[in-house]
Length: 327
Length: 293
Image (cartoon, rainbow over all chains, first blue to last red; front, side, top):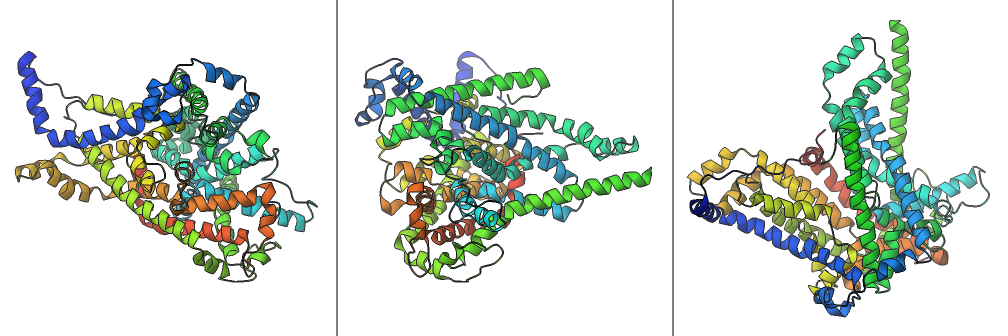
């Protein structure tokens, strides 16, 4: 992403300062515009960042913002408490398994879809498939969970009714209320919701490949699969790497492959809790529901530090291995 | 040789078309099923076997939905937050982006550092909650609008769009004596329809679908959004304790399941309605400023 080109101003010392001042005055309305945005970010993005301090303090909500600075330091007490929490092992395992499964299944899906769409010669059909496939991206997780309920629940779910009518099973399968199904449910719904959306970016990458490459390959006798393997895939490599870096960086939050939090929170219930409770839902519960702000902030902080570390290391590895990277 | 190649191509094409067709059905059928279920008598849906069209057609579900002040209020709150949130978000984002789109802007390096840093780091939910609480935004309608007026992502997209506008357009207006405000509102905004439409789509859909803020930051029943109400019903019927509630009919054959699918249709329809109008803009719009292949 190209962000700015700084124009070097001529002159030095006093004359330079005068020159800058003149330029600033000329641009004052623009600085007013930008200043609004800066104040906004200061309040809603940067003040919460200072709030990270509360993870190291005995913060009480009655202290307000000031309390972030004035409450007593407790060092790593809350981090220590989390590591020794009896749920710690389960939370870490669930968070990692869910994230990894989603990278393994939800990340390649749009690449495959883009490659298949690229092979379609009927433009109308291609456009139709594309338009329909990214529709679920615009639907909220609440509706996705509602749809899953309508399809998979034990009492009203169409799938269970159909399976029973066809004699595959005698009793409804508890897709939504059994720890055995939660991971499959989360990965499946993430693929369903986000596959078509990410296909847009991969199709754009494919459209940047020169048609003459395909023509040359065809003359050399390369079949369809060979052309996909030796031209389409290498042509998408840069985009694949960038999206992979982004995916790995946001894997704990589930960013690109569907929000882990929303899924775990909405699909979660007391029965599938052994597989559905993740670090984020736990932090939410102890933080906002139980009012343990410092403890929850500490858990949140661990998670964001790991995320930032992941994005930088995956970016570094990508740069070394393939030469393409995000930054 | 040539013939066998053609046969291979035919097999290859057939496989792809079949797979794509199946994918398309998988994406579409759930929406269709929810639609027919909302027009089927609730108690009849529970028996199963409704796959292709309503077996016991009724408008009762919609009638009960519209008679319930809880749902109607939630719908209105959602409409209001979507309209005002989108308009205010567009205004602030484009104003800030316009300032930043000037390549000769002083301190632009500082400004961009502030933005990019805010894009990658955040304080997390708990400190954010504390900030909203201190600002007195909790439990007010403003909590839906104010904190989401500026997103760094849209900001960067808008900046790269404004930079593509030919400089001559601004220069000639300057010569005619127009100030920055006039230029922005009279010239820049009107030629920026594609990016404005793109951002409006995303902000609007985000506002319309949002339930987290209604769950976290609001206690007043008056301020609940449609998405939140839906979450409430789904959670209730999803939790094992309450599966009996499904059998409890609200009135003439209406069940909590049929009410749930009805509310889902009500929440999906507005999105489907704006989709075709804005779709032509967003593929191009989202590619600006994002990954360049």
